[in-house]
Image 1 (cartoon, rainbow over the protein chains, first blue to last red):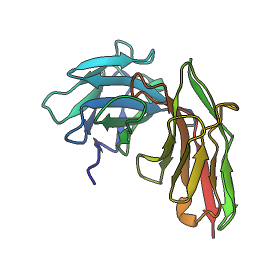
Image 2 (cartoon, each protein chain N blue to C red):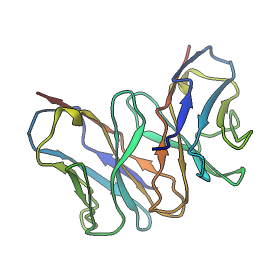
Image 3 (cartoon, chains in turn blue, orange):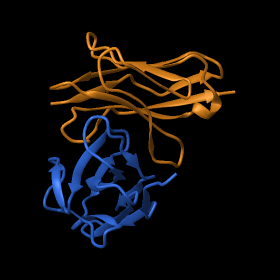
Image 4 (cartoon, rainbow over the protein chains, first blue to last red):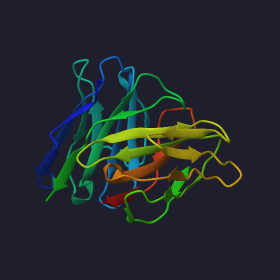
Length: 115
Length: 112
């Protein structure tokens, strides 16, 4: 079964550094998402992306965050200058359609540790 | 805004025990409801869903019924197995977008 893949599985970075988290969504999917889960807390929506632009973003997704689909297969999340509170598990997801019935397919996540 | 509340965990059960994991929600509009599961070292996987009141979602022996009157979507299984050990997330979306609102998740450990 096709799956969403994320790399790396674990990223350690120093505060203030830029990080790029990578995702390869399922190939015929058109809708892409990033979520994150800070340890012990809820899985939180960050951003959704469709037709090469952001369709919705949360309050968490401030100017330090950006997303890109650079080559038609990868979907990346960039954090420009990491803070300690950015430490979390980041999940990428994709879907072939939008709406209440459409299931999201999630990757295994990237654990980001900011020191 | 939309929110999902799950019972506090973790939950530890013996194999073949009955499982109930509570989930309640608040939402504007008419949400679809989901249970996602995360096995150790893996991503979130859709376990089951229900899209309208009184619908019952079921998969792998798990069931949950969409109860509009109590705004609940409790997950049940009659006889758990060790392989059911995982983190379980209740979630909703209100249909305009596939954006999901998740609960905190609960860890289930099943001992032999």
